[in-house]
Amino acid sequence: MLECTAYKNYPLFKKYREIDMFDSKSIDDIASRLADSIPSGLQSMKSDLEKNFHGILQGALGKLDLVTREEFEVQKAVLAKTRSKLEALEKRVEDIEQLLNKE
Image 1 (tube, rainbow, N blue to C red):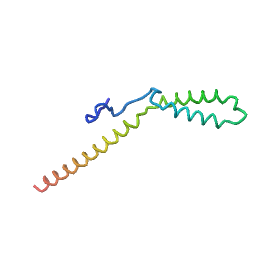
Image 2: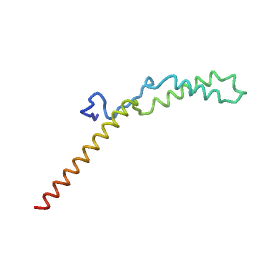
Image 3: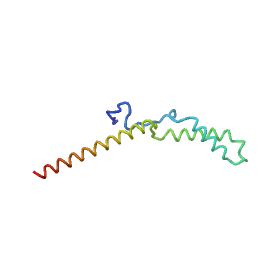
Image 4: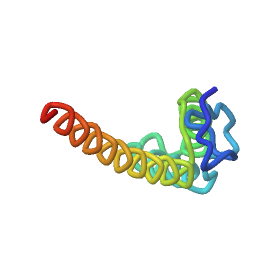
């Protein structure tokens, strides 16, 4: 696994397959909104449908390879710093090449 030396505790790519990382309240809210949208004739099944929606959402989201917002922001900063260093190095190489071509 690749790691950034500046942020040793933050692997560049970290796979999460645990449901714990998802805000259960958000999943509950989505499941509830889905259950609320069912036709009035099926309202008697609302509780069962809401539980099923909740389980389906947890299962589907649990299969995704996701990182936390914090890790995303850290990697975004690392990438920006790396780009900056790369641009500076490219400029130095260009300057050195120009000096060598003058000789």
